[in-house]
Image 1 (tube, rainbow, N blue to C red):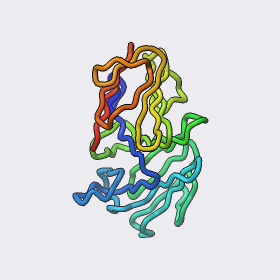
Image 2 (spheres, rainbow, N blue to C red; image 1 turned 120 degrees about the horizontal axis):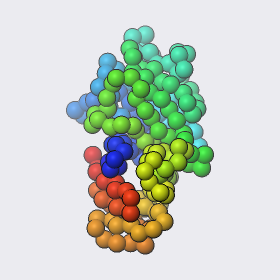
Image 3 (cartoon, helix red, strand yellow; image 1 turned 45 degrees about the vertical axis):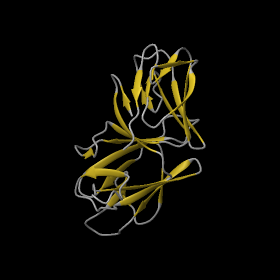
Length: 193
């Protein structure tokens, strides 16, 4: 998801996310260019929370949460810093109290592939807007934009006029996986990978 004037966000919809090195087999949901295993760990959404689970317990492939080593499945809480391997640091946050969507910010020098400013683990809703509790804070916007899932559809809702792929709507519309969403003071581009 590309948000004009804000950045690019790798948006993952699955309930089980594989984190590891980029692989030509495509078996990694969150590829990080670093010295990690191809399948280093899993992040699993369970009800309203998330659990981090090591895939391999190798001494050279350590996993820590807030500097404490973990050996098995461990619940993540807002503000946790996850250390993977030799230096990958990821901040986990769940900024909005009414949404199970989480955000991962890579705070070390490592990059995702493709490169993204942050990773969104999208549950049912993703909120973009001017407030700090939004999953994607957009300070210049006047109002929130909500993306939400209903069955296999992705829907966008906001107050005010909205265009989906240049077609005007009344502020509420089903969108495709490759869509351009425009409002009075924002533009978002979705791209399937």
